[in-house]
Image (cartoon, rainbow, N blue to C red; front, side, top):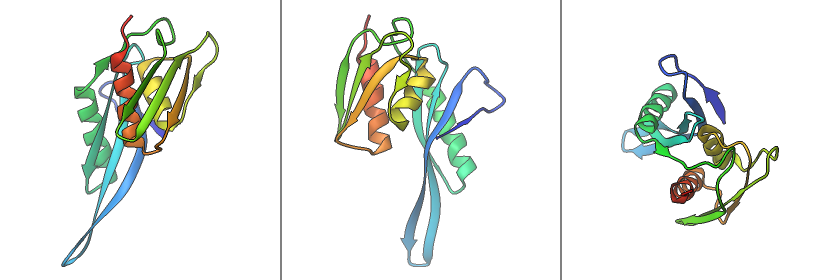
Length: 150
């Protein structure tokens, strides 16, 4: 997981969660392309994610960042944590998010940590169950954050 910043909008935290090399086998040979899973947030309660696909890594990252910035959602926060415990299942990925006391930090796996940091959550306990597929784990985390209401 890498942190990057592109000059036009420095107020956004941009994190690359995974980059996958995809090969399509055709009659003429193998065709390589890349997919980049990125998370974008303003650290003030807005977060988004996207999957960018292109023939070059840099293009895939750029496409993912642009799409993620268009699809930001608002998250209800209570100080530096979430208001209450929530558990969400998306396909086979199941994510449990629990509020934590001040100074706990972000106790989370890679994809969930990226979403929480981009969102501005500083204290949270999480558990990712059943699946370690980063796309489904991020989708489950975003669904859990959408369900929060103060």
